[in-house]
Amino acid sequence: MPTIAAKNALTAMWPILYAARDRLLTGSELSELRRLCDVLTRGVPGRDVYNDKVEQLCLSIHSSGVFETGQAKKPDRLLEYIDELRNMLE
Image (tube, rainbow, N blue to C red; front, side):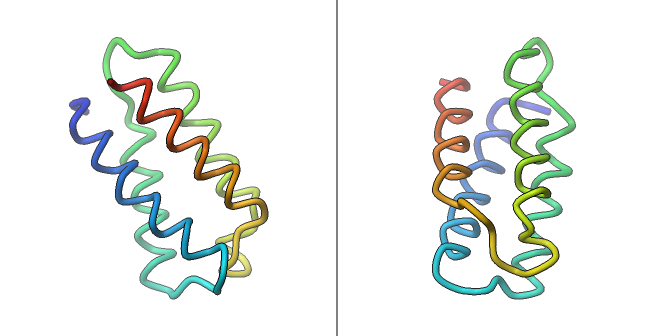
């Protein structure tokens, strides 16, 4: 996947997880979050460290319980992780 597509996916993921700080996510938000994880885990060629960290992010999102309960545990840490990944693509 091109770097710009990865940046866009991370940018789209951020507000969804931010919303999980204060409320339960809707079904469409959860579907979009799942889709964005799938997109991101395709990887960016030549960015092995970034790709490994993306896999860790998506595993962290899944283990946060967001897909089971609609609300993530420690969403602030996930948001920081997304920011770190975006910075890696600069």
